[in-house]
Image: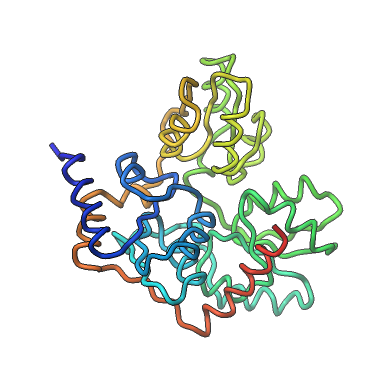
Length: 304
């Protein structure tokens, strides 16, 4: 049996010796979240990486997240405990494919979810997160946009902004897209007093059943502020650990079968330790790509 306490102590010592900071996404294994210096959503962690004085960032997440940290922190070394941790949705579009889509729709703003590769961000006019997508698109004042790569988040934006024609790339997060309305209905029936929180990466018929449609960071704030004492959580199961920390005493229920992202769960404490020990898994973003991608991210940040 793995001794998480001993491994965690070793990791913290190595991080101190290497002058490194450890970032972990909300969907990571509980023990990986617990050893991290900062836990949060992908963009929030990348901003944290930019603000820290540490020269080395260990990013426990998936590849596009570590790339975003590198985009914002070009002078820092960004490492991944397991570089194989990818994102199927991010892989559903390439920079080349987006460039063709843009060329076929001249003058139409390209809005890209941060859950995308650096080369895709570089072809985009502006990025969005699941928390700010509606506000960012509204701020553009455009009557028509191209939205990539998540068709479900794009559909949510279109629903809330009916005056904007939203052209959708046909991409999706398998973990969220596989959820059915029946699963949510069953979970709510088992816990009728619970508020239902769903991520906008879910399908429209699932979103229809939610009391609140929220990003992971918004779910944490919502659970803390809500009068509800119980919640059905319709997002990747790793968030339950963070929710229980954020709102102790409240109860959080998963769907069945559990929502698990195999890519997020690739990272283990042992891999974090090995990454720090050998300073392995460096993430590189070519400077020409990085500077163009940075513009799309900075435009979003400027909006707020």
